[in-house]
Every structure is written in structure tokens, then in C-alpha cells.
Image 1 (cartoon, one colour):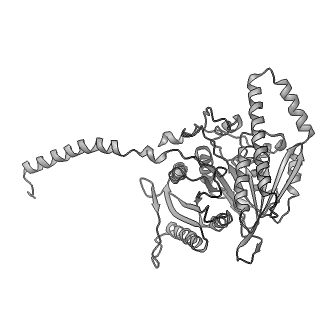
Image 2 (cartoon, one colour):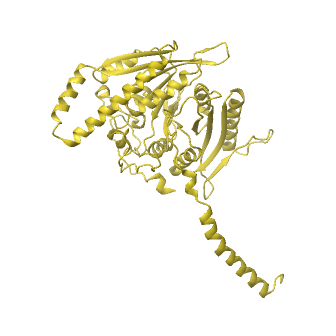
Image 3 (cartoon, helix red, strand yellow):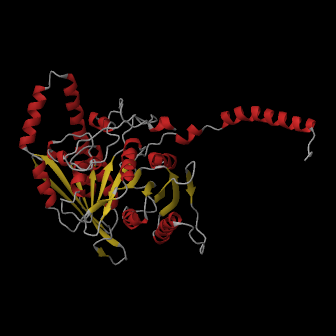
Length: 448
């Protein structure tokens, strides 16, 4: 159109190239994305004090699990000293686009109709959490929608958790409650997402098996009363589960029962025999030393818990002495059916004679032996289950270990915890007896 002559056009091109050559190194020097991922210490629930903010990322595929999640968060005792900051992440499969996106939602304008089913689900989730924030004090909610392929969806969860510096990620179990009360599988991709999150999460992770969490009774404050049970066998995951339940017990309408399982005389004699035979084997002796250290940490934490909560009538502490898995299952069945939530540790990498035989019939190893037992249709259970895995790092400021290549950890990390990173992924199973296949997962930080 002859708007510019050749001389003016040439000058403009040269100026554009010169500006690009100057600005690019300046921006590279000034903007360093790695600063956004500076290490933070409060990556576990156990390290969060009751006078600090408690940050949680909640992953949601469908609105069906939202009532249970909101009830769980409401029972986590938000206070002015320790408010709860919730990042509700709606996960949507990428279709019809070349690249994924992350949408941060503000208050939706009233009267705007939903364009499709996905947007309608997002609107239901947003409205539910907005009403939860308005009706509950000391709770702050930010809703987001992540649109990405299932293969990389765990990265959105982990990146959000890292950026927001959260202590706990809650992901839904890949099975949902059917009409007959059992659990039926939904999308098999959800299971793969959960396994990838467990392997790459920068903080603790909780898998929520939803069987409803409406509460057993209404109190005078028009709040739901919950009965929570913790099954404590020992190890970092169980300590994390107890720490979260301890936080919930601070709520005036939550009753807590802690059942600790202790080894019987048969187990103790076997351990003594193994310890005597392994004195000349350095590697086995190292494992025994780390196991003794974990037992000491368990004893110290349980003692601290009992000292602080000894006068609380809403907390019951029970000890059961068992020798093998069959006695463990029998003890679990004695728990009152009034409990509507079980919190257990995943216990991955921990070999305990107290659960011997339970792993042979495990259908979902990502839940651990006890979590899989409680979620099994063969176990008459109508309560929801939260399976907790404590974050295990390599020390302050160090990146996460590659799941298939665990390295040296800090002094409070035992060999069993390190081995958990090698269980990064599992293939789907059609029966209880099907053997597990390990699949190498790439290092999460190397992908970013």
C-alpha cells in the first residue's frame, strides 16, 4: 500500500533487531524463574504449628467429591491464628487445543450462562468453594482450572503446590462410590495421575477415598460432628497421618480415636534373632539401625501427643498388641462403626510383620496395605479414608530425588523412606493376584 518507503522500512527492521539484541540478555539477567521455587521448610503437616497458616491444594476431577472435600477442610480446625488457605484445582483434559493452560478464577458474574459441560462443572465447583469461604471463618479459597493432557496433569498439581508453598496435596481416589455402596472405577487415567503425584510431589500427599463425610450428628452450633480414627503402625507416613488428625481434633465437634498397633512377643523374638544374625552384615545392620531410629521417633511423637492431649475427653488412645496381619485385621474390625473417617499412613517401603500377608492381596498399592484394606469391597467399611504420604526430601534446599534413583537423605530419613521413591508408577490391575510392574518416571524438576 506504499505506506512506508524502502528506507523507512529498513530502518524499522534494523531498530527492531537492535532492540531484541539488547533486551534479551537484560531480561535474562533480571528475570530468573528459579527464584519462584526457592526452598520452603513447611512441606509437611507435622511441621505446621497451630499458630501458622495451613496451605492445601485440592485436586478435583468432578463436582461429586466437592462436598466431602469441603467437609474435610471444615473439620481441619481453621482459626485466626492458623487459617486455612485452599487452592482448589479443577483438572480438565486437554481437547481441541495445542497447549495447556491454567485459569485463575475470580468472582463469577451472576447471570452468565455456561458455554459447555466443562464450564458448568467449573461453575459448580467455584460456587461451592465460594459459599464455603463465606460461611466459614478463617478460610481463604482460590479456585483454578488446569487444562492439560492426562500424561502431564500431575505437573500442574506439583507446580501449583510448589508455587503456593503448600504443606498438603489432596487428590481423589480413582474409584467412586456406587449405588450398592461399593467402589467402582471411573477413569483409569486418574489412577496414573495419583501415582505420578505421589512420586513427584514437593510436599505431603493425601489420597481421599470418598464414601461421604456428612457427619453423624448436628451440634448446637449448626456444625457437623465427625468421628475420626487413626491407625498408627509407625513410620513417617503414620506420623504425618497422626499430625493431620491432631489438627482436626482441635475442632470442638471432632472426636478422635487413635489405635496404635504394637508388636507381640513373637514379633519381638523374631526381630532379636534377626538382629543377632545380622551383626556381621554391614548393610543389614545399617537397615536395623535406621529402623531403630524410626521407632525412637515414633515413640517420641506419640509420647508428645499423649502428653498434650491427655486431658482432652474427645480424644481416645488405644493400644493393640498383634503378631501378624490376621490379628491386625481383627483389631481393626473392632473399631466402632460410628467413625466416618479413617486417616492412615501409606507406609510405602516399610516392611512390618504386623501387616504380613496383607500386601499379597493388594489391589491398589498406591494406598498402602492398610489403606487398600479399608478401601476394599471385601472389608465392610462405610467410612471415608484418607491415605497420607509424608514428604521426604534430601535436606533443606535440595531438589526431589529421582523416583528410580534415590540418594542420600537427611538424618531423619531411613532407607525404607528412600525406597518409596522407586515405586513411581503402577500399571492397572484386573485382579488381586496380578503382579506389579514398575515404570520409570522422569524427574519432575528436570522436566521444568
